[in-house]
Length: 261
Image (cartoon, rainbow, N blue to C red; front, side, top):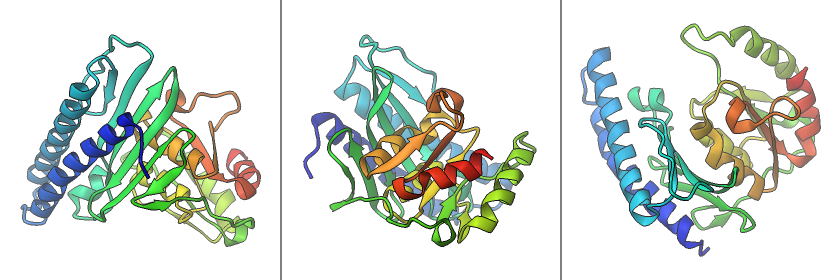
C-alpha cells in the first residue's frame, strides 16, 4: 500500500512518537506506584510524544493548522487544512502498565477528515486510511465485520469515570444494549475502539463526551473499511459535539436505534 505524501508523513511521525512512548512504557512498571510520581512521568511521556509529532508534521507542512491534546491550537496559513492529534490515547492504561494505548493523527481538509493514522505501538499495529484509498492495518486491507445479527455482535464504548455528568445516560445505553448483544467492551482508548470496528474486531462503537482528537483519525478509518459513522443526534457534528456512533452497514440501523433509544 503506497499512500500519499501526507499519509507517509503522518505514518512516520506516528512511528517516531510510538518508539518514544514504548521506551517510556517500559519504565512505567519500574516506577513507584505513588500516584504523583507515575502521573507526572506519564504526562512527560505524553508531552514528549506530542513534541515529536508536532516537529515532524509542522516541518513537513509548515502552513497547516494544528489541534493537539497537550498544546494550544495553531491557525495555519492554509486555513483549509489542519492536523488533529492525540499523542497518547489511553493514558490511564499506559499509567497502569496496560498495553492498550495509541498515537492518533488525522488530517482535516475543509472540515472533512481525509486521512487518519492510529498506531498501537505496544502491539506494532498501524491502522491507517485515506479518503478513497481504503483502510489498512500494516500490510492488510481492513473490512468491517459482516455480522448482521445484534445478538451475535460485540460493541465498544467508554464509561464515565471520576464523577462525570454523563453516567445516567450511559447506564441507560447499557440497559438497552446489553440484553440485545453478545457483549460490550470498555478498553479505554477510543481511537483503538474505532480502529477495531474498521478491523471487524468490534461490530460497533458509540461514545459521548469525546474530544475531536479522540475520534478524528478513526472516522476516516472506519468509513474506508466500509463502515458507517454518524453523529449521535441527527444533524449533529461529530467533532464539534464529541459524540459518535459507528458500525458495519448491516447492523448500523438496529444498533443506532437501540443506542438512540
